[in-house]
Length: 406
Image (cartoon, rainbow, N blue to C red; front, side, top):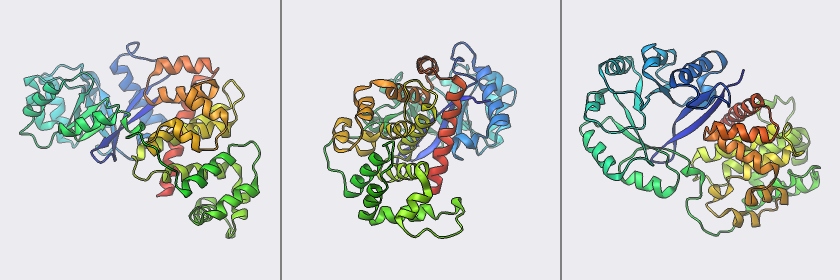
């Protein structure tokens, strides 16, 4: 059984991954308020214990998970270790003696606690010694209220402020100036600055390879020629082809031999991996992960979707869907420089066709907008269980691929 899950990254001031918030449902149909917080948390714990490990979703980073008063009282947080869990106290819980006792007990056992969607009340001061993180909804909180929160926690140096729903770099910079240390939102998936620039020779070579591998029939001579013009890419290809995961009995020593031995599927994944990890090394790692998750999800689910979508085209479309943020340039400007098929450009720029619907589906999955996911899946004639399976597997595949690149 697969569970619908979204992992929303939490970044630090340097835009490095700090943790993920995990949002679970047992199907796309279970959308708040149709199930309550107790049931949602219970299903999440069940999933983590019997269907998957938390590390399968978080890559061994801590997981922020919502808990109600009832699930705290039942001891559910203690089913997970102190290293893999941040206990997120839901904003719907009223501060009182029972909650304070539970928070103190968890703190003494080594758990990290966070207050979700915090709205300041003086009574919360009793909780501050046991709280590590206070989450503030950026959209719902004024600067004056943030200043009030900062004054209230001024003598508690261990408390960090986390800004939720940060959607632009302007908001990120403003929150940074206000003293926030952690950030949650999709600001990193948008261009940091809009500017025109030329692609480097290596990026152009990668663009050629992306184009060649998007064709139904591979032109081995053309692909070999591109590799032969870029020494760095050739070295990486040979290293990849000879890596221990393939368990080769003999060494691969030529470009052509590597291409033939890897085959189309592995070659496409290698090129996608090289593109994602080398296009802009200064960008947050979560941006690269998002692009790769989208690529793998679109490739996997395309076989079942309406519209006769080629899996290789779907993979490349997902991969290129964040190219504007990766290169910090307007999407239309970037795509003018890349030799991509019109089908891909229509999906990315004009938002038309089945490919565009696939992208919309994975974007809604990322944000845990389950009702929109349901509608899009039905429109693409997709089985909901297959959607969940493809998304879970895309996240696992991405983590595995990036771990091999380190």
